[in-house]
Amino acid sequence: MTDAIAKLKELGLSIQKPTMEVGQLPSDITMLSSEQIGEKFTVLTAWADYASTQMAIAVIEERSSQRRLDFLQNKLLLQKMGTAIKGERITLVKAQIAVDQDIQDLTLEYEEKYAYRKLVEMMLNNFERDISLVSREVTRRSNDLRSTRKEWGV
Image 1 (cartoon, rainbow, N blue to C red):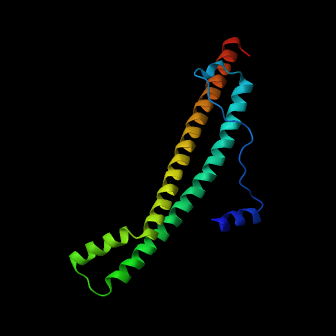
Image 2 (image 1 turned 90 degrees about the horizontal axis):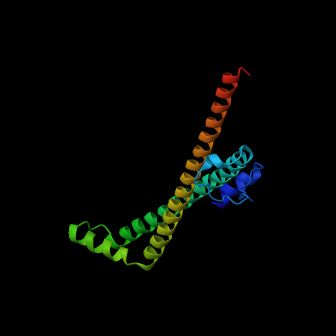
């Protein structure tokens, strides 16, 4: 993972957490001024960009963890099975592998990476949903302004 981040830095790109607080949208978004709507849109977009980056990192780390776990499981399966392949023996060997401390450690690591990815995914979805809401309000206001201009011949 650090290789990917280093490559980004080489390209002049960096992952920066937004400095502004995301806050909550009010229950009635129509009460916000146009300036507040614009500011909320900017803040939500910055946080969505950051969450998207965190999501990519989480997916990469989860995959890496899964690959290490799969590799160790397969390695232990080969070591414990030898050349004999029998139904009962396979079940026994898989059970022995499942209780191996290294397998348990990697399984826990993988589950933590998976849980983090799911949380980041949820946050990203929330930001994107809020951005859509703010965007719809901007569009509604623009349409209202156009209607008013047509009514008054402006």
